[in-house]
Length: 268
Image 1: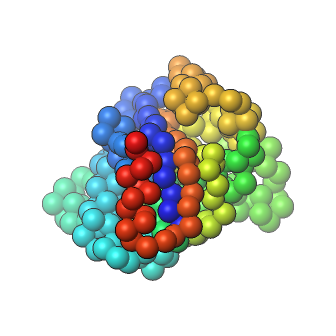
Image 2 (image 1 turned 45 degrees about the vertical axis):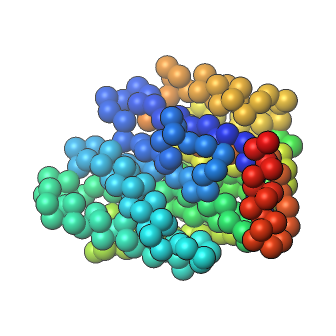
Image 3 (image 1 turned 30 degrees about the horizontal axis):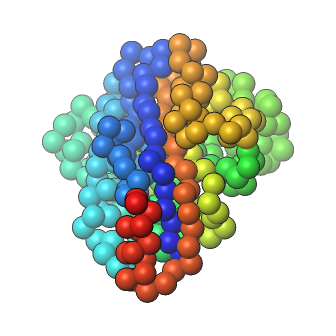
């Protein structure tokens, strides 16, 4: 499977907080349709340098992909190793900066490969796949309220306003508490699909139903980015960050030469 995309769009904003503990990768000003790896991380810890945790996770996971992916595929085993590498980088940072002890981050990851789209997440940052205005896939939060919903102790509506809705059960922290990464490979991908990665701050004013209504419109990817940003601006209490990836075309995998030619022709 050979997937080409349009120019991706991203943003990260402080919201109504004093500092921004979210990070996205690639940096919005440097992203292009040639990028394959996308990350959104939401730092946890405040005084314990959540902003360092999210940025370090992005940097170290990208470094691992660049160093070791090669001809391999970004399957569950590879992504888990990338996260383990990030955790070892956390250990090194905390050893040199003891004041950062306790820092942690969520993770939402998407990688476009020849075998489909690899999705991974830890915590309550989400990955969606939208088709014709419907969320045909979304990750399940590793959070207290999601666990309560699954046990039918509260309803999804109650979860949205629950006083402990921000309590997460998994995070990238360090090797002493290795994160359990949930990885999925999506093979049902069509031209026109959207992938959307976001931190939980986006969901304050753009829950799934609102996102579906936005993606159901005939807006361009840039206009969708602007619409979501307008929904959050000046109202969202938390930091909010997202990545928006629009699938331009999907072809079945051919020879390496055919794939290179297809990739080059997509920009003509």
